[in-house]
Length: 207
Image (cartoon, rainbow, N blue to C red):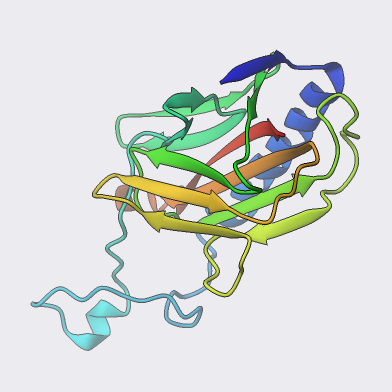
C-alpha cells in the first residue's frame, strides 16, 4: 500500500468530515432522546425470562470496546476521526497530519477488510470524483452510498467471521477518486445514559 503525504486541502477535508462526524454523534449518538427502537423498526432481543412488556425496553446489541480496524491487502488504513467510549476509557482523535493511503481497484472493484468488528449500526461511503491533490475541502461528495442497504449495487458489507467483515465496492471505473468511509457501532449498554453509538471514519484515495 502506497502512502501519500496529506495536502493542506486534505487536512481541511479531514477536519471538515471529522467535525461533521463528531457533530452527528453529538446530535444522534450521545443523546438519550433517540427514537424508541420498536417505533424505528429495529429488532428487540428477548431474554427467555422477560415478559413482552419488559422486552420493549431492553436491547442486547453487539458492542465493541475498541474501534474496528480497516485494512487493504493486509495493511491498516489509519482512521482520521474517532469518537469512541467504553467502560474502561475512551478515544477521541482527529488526525491533522494524516497519510492518505492510495488503494487500487481490480476491474473497477475494491475489497477492504474490517477486523475486530461486529455488524455496524451504519456504514456510509462518500465518493469524490477527483484526485487527492485537487479535492475541494468545502465541497459536497459526488455520491453518498449506504453500504448496509440490501438494494444498492455499489457498496456491500458482509460479516466474514466472528470478528471480521468484508466491504466490497463496485462500479468504480478507472478514474482517480477520493473516498470517505464513516461507521457507527453500538456503545456498551452501560453507557446508554451518555451515548448509544461510537463512531470512526477513514479517508483514502483510489486509482
